[in-house]
Structure formats: C-alpha cells, structure tokens
Image 1: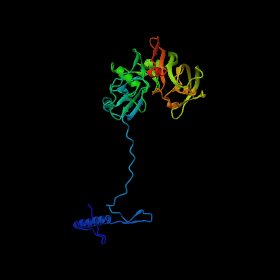
Image 2: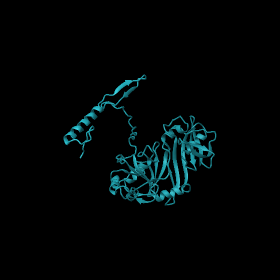
Image 3: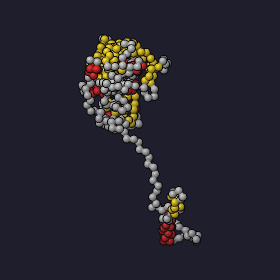
Image 4: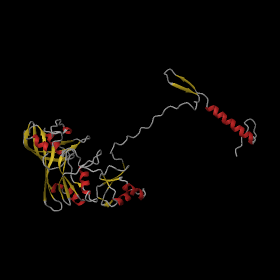
Length: 366
C-alpha cells in the first residue's frame, strides 16, 4: 500500500489526505506539460523553440523508409532456391532440405503451385528430380504456370530425343526476365500433355534471335551421354548466315580464343590460357546488293561464336546490333541453324536433321 508523506512535516498523511496529495501532484504535472513553448526565428529564418514544447506541438516529419521496388508482373519471387545433386523424388528432396518446416507446410507448397523445377510448376509428390535440376519455392502461387503455350515445330521425336525448329526471338531456356515463353517450356508442355511424368532436358542452346535445329533429351542417361561425348557424337553443325558486304576470300577458317567482358559481350583474343578455343569454317554461297549468304560450319559451339567471327572478318551478321551492325534488312538476326548431324546415343545410328531456310533469307537472294 502506497503511503504519502507531507513534504514539510515528517509524518504520514491520512488515507484521504494521501488521495488529495496525489491528485495535486498529478495536476502539477499536467500543468507543466501544457506550458507554452517560447518560439522565435533566428537571422537565417530558422525556427527555434525554447523551453518545454506543448504536447499539441506537431513533431517534425521524419523520413519514411524507402520501400523495396514492387516486382514486375510475371517476375518470380523466390523464398528458397535449391540445387539437386542426385536422383530423388521431389517430396523427399523437399523434406530433406526444408527441415525447419512442418511437413504439412511443405506439402502445401506443392498443392498451392509454389514449387518450380527448372522453371516449371510441379505439384506431383513423386516427380523425379535429377542431378543439376534447380528447385525453387516461390513466394506466391504460380497461377500462370499452366497457360497453354504455342506447340513447338517438331522435326523428329522418339523415346530418347526430340528435335525442334526453334523460331527467331524465342529463348532456348529461361532467363532472369522470362520463365515461360521458352523453347524448353514449349517442348516440356508438349510431352507432358501425353504423359504427366515425362520430362525433357535441353542438350545445347542457340541464341534467342537465331532460328533452327534444337535438340532435347528425354531422360537423364541420354543427356549425360550427349554432354560427356558431345564432340565425338556430333559430327556436323551448320548454319546459314546473311552478312554485310562481299567477302574478298569466298572460303576460309577463323580460329581464336573467345573471352567475355563485364557487359556479357564476347570478343576474340589470342589468350589460350583464359579464352575458349573457337573454330569457324565459312563458305560464301551467294551475293546480292551488298550482302552475302554464307554457309557456316563450326567445330566448337561457343557463345555468340559465329557472330563474333563474322565481325572479325569485317562482315557482321545483319540485324546484329550487339556486335556493331546497324542494318536490318530481314527484321531479325540473319542467322539460322539449318543442320545437325550426330550419332544416336542409344541406337548408334547416324542421325541428320535439317530446318528449312527461312523464307525471308531466300527471298533476299532470289
């Protein structure tokens, strides 16, 4: 029990007097807090406050913390990104990696379309993961993941591989800014329409603005076989290129070591230690109105290899503003992967696939 003492006399107050004393003290405190502040402005026009400010005095505005930028429409927001190191069912993999979460929460991620494998939304518990697969837990449900995509232009298909003619302007695989509109997603959706457990694995890539033959594997064994023995299995990779100007030498070979700068621009060098060896053979087929139609055969498949080597020769591929060409007579990059020859990894038969030259190419050289 609280007992108040008289400030002038050293003896306790009665219960009633204690109550009155406490009311007086509270009243004094309120009066002090309402004391009007003395305000004036100095020579520079700045507001100066002396004494205790009234409670009603508005406080100086504080800076609001910067808000994080809103994600762009369709941009993936990942809670977890995990790489697979061996064959394992999807649910088992998630349980082993998300040990701090209840199993019911992990299952909810799957049923709520928040789990993506290599960019594709997966809801099956027993979906098989393989080495190098990437599993992402998205912050929100991927409602757009099942939108129908355009059917791929299929050149050949069997139980082990599938070959398509990729159009110009379509990514081979997903990028940071595009997950769905890719050749990989088109082929994956096509095979899963027939078998929900089916999967495809991309074996090689061609540039977004390059059209032509693109190969996919249907299982991990075929993919690994092609990866490990690519240079032995693949016997020919040929392109058609529309280039600027007329070549002084109608046939030849370009060899250099390719490197890449901080802006992702590839360039030739003589640095065998740090660069990647690139070998390109070319042969001029036709010439017309200051342009050349060139057959290109590559021994190595480096990033932007043909585009860089044509620039080195002084005859850039038309429509290739990345490597210095400003003319665009085709309305697209003048590069088409028209032939791929390789030994089938299972049957051991020699396979040859071609994609017809784009109409705009042939019209230009009629």
